[in-house]
Length: 136
Image 1 (cartoon, rainbow, N blue to C red):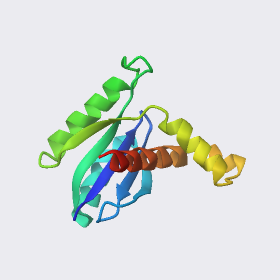
Image 2: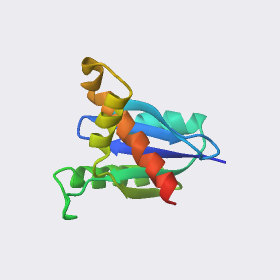
Image 3: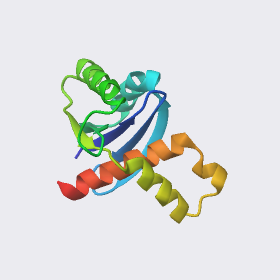
Image 4: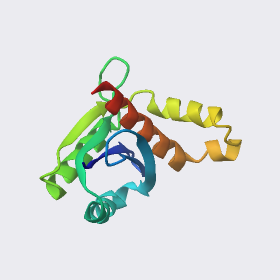
């Protein structure tokens, strides 16, 4: 089987997570500079088989767009352009950053580790992916 890749896209950084080949568990992959995302994915897809990309769709509590919604829409267009044979699906990303910070507290990470925004983004992508797998 192929993996599923999750993207927590941001203006500066993008958190990535993937499933194992059997799609049982989500694991944080890395955080990349958002400008380098497509290049990173090109290299990753040469090494790993991925059948689906999920990307967090930023929405307000009332389901209206956020300031980041157009950024994600542009990222989706770039993904579809560069990887036309790979489906891209949006998922709700509300609360994933808060859940990531809470998880970091529960793991006992020190304050300076919890301030690492790159780690927060990677954990948020992992939570988003695990929730997607749990709900399908």
